[in-house]
Image 1 (cartoon, rainbow, N blue to C red):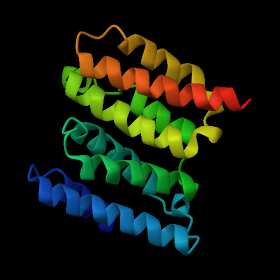
Image 2 (image 1 turned 45 degrees about the vertical axis):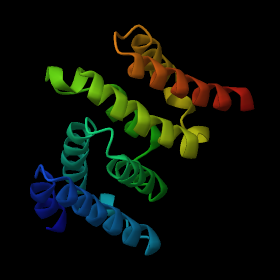
Image 3 (image 1 turned 90 degrees about the vertical axis):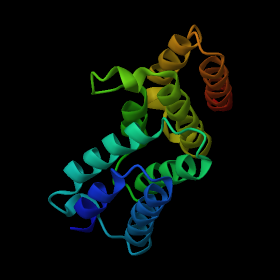
Image 4 (image 1 turned 90 degrees about the horizontal axis):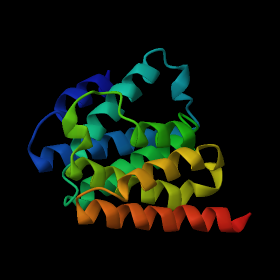
Length: 168
């Protein structure tokens, strides 16, 4: 399938190829949303989405590649809009790592994850009330990180969460 082939391409290390691969994900999700295609009905989409999410989590360490972070955010947002996943599941993917790989806890990965979370919370924050506590725990845990940029991104995310809470 296109998804599986694109997952293989996405593992490339060349930023231009990664960005093109993300564009394919964005395009597929956009077409599915536009045509009201229910991807969850496709037998292997859940597993493919999980694989894709794992690959994206690995790539967020290149947090200076703003185009890539924007595309990853758009893929998550498109998946939420199309009801292929929900905000709570996205937040769970971004705040918890299923991998025991220490690299996913590196400051580069944390900064990328925090930036993507900020975008998701800004756009879909009104839907993530079930995961606010999890989100805040993730942020608070990173406020004591030794890296200044991780602390700053955590503070920015806390501000976004406060905007949601303030609406109630």
